[in-house]
Length: 215
Length: 215
DNA sequence: TACAAAATACCGTAAAAAGCGTATTGAAAT
DNA sequence: ATTTCAATACGCTTTTTACGGTATTTTGTA
Image 1 (spheres, rainbow over the protein chains, first blue to last red):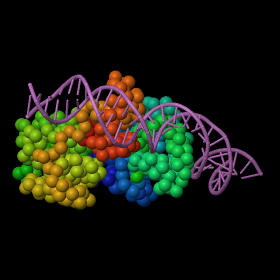
Image 2 (image 1 turned 180 degrees about the horizontal axis):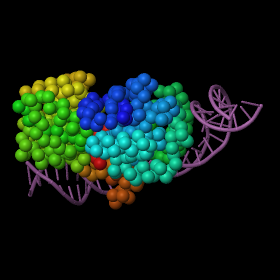
Image 3 (image 1 turned 135 degrees about the vertical axis):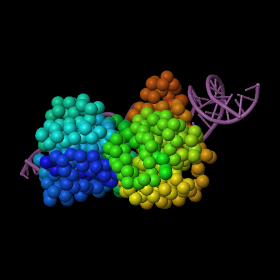
Image 4 (image 1 turned 45 degrees about the vertical axis):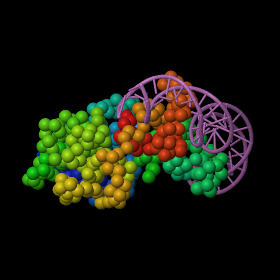
């Protein structure tokens, strides 16, 4: 019997999953969590085999939760169940140690199949994402040897202010810095993220909120 | 008996709702749609009283769908069922004619209550959104007398290129225009949206994709 | 057909960002 | 004890954006 923990802040979805899983005697939903912190609190006592993890959750988001799970409970298999379908999110979660990535529109059959395969040690992603999984597997960027926190906390602070429309001068005033310093941070951020203008930075930041630790 | 149509591209959620509604004999799910176009195709033959409408859907998104519904079937009550919880999205949908806005983490009780009240001609939103509903009701910006398409198609094209990191010079080259023209468009866009720099424009565009008709 | 709106283009100036640098300080890690 | 890195700050140049205009042509529609 495979013990499953579901983490999602949408109760409608959790209720749906409960009913869907009711037909499978070999799968058992042993716990549900509405945010990442609840997942962390529950795993110790509940010992799930597989966690179905949403990305957008309050308190601790899916990415942050996965980071903690990977360092404290590396044997638990994590399957991301998200609506985010952009390549960057999928790669980020795989690189952080997720074994599967399913869209929320997945049907029961694929969900069951994914859990079975992943519980046996494999990978499984929604059909449209196969090429991303291939790319990930070829890249060798597994969770154990992965690049840590790309941006420093100061840089994240500045990214957030840029996203909210502040100019370097405004940011300098807010943070009691010289505009030169803010300018340097901005340049370093661009360099680290391989970007070259504000529009792309804002886009990147909004699309990678969870991974940047923003909001 | 209240006839309900559900529009959502996530089958897990639809399946969950089906089971949730099974306990209520006075509500009947007469149809489900996976995108806005299916909604439009179905309403004529199915005559639902209430539509539970997601915003993020392929082909025709929730906003576009609501626009069509309001002009062709103004008597059908539309309740938005979305995960988007920012004020702008809520206001946009209310102003477009939605009678309710619920988060997807709403529990069964509130969902039933919302459908009942709205079917009787009222408004209903998730608890956290009450102040936004109040603001909307006070503003008088109802669907019938509402400001049409804010940005022209050319302007939307340019917004999209800006979001993707292009400079005015690059956009000019791509669209065979003078950089002056692109500059003017940019100015007009800022003026229309009441913004004053690129970062805010990108943020606005990404947060209002559906309403701007982007992607 | 006439009017309004959208798309086009230009002029000038000021502010901001982008792209090269260098350099000092302090804290953490090896 | 030394290296590394984050945070700080400055210099200089070029490009791009932002903001104030004006004006012509095209297009849709009343």
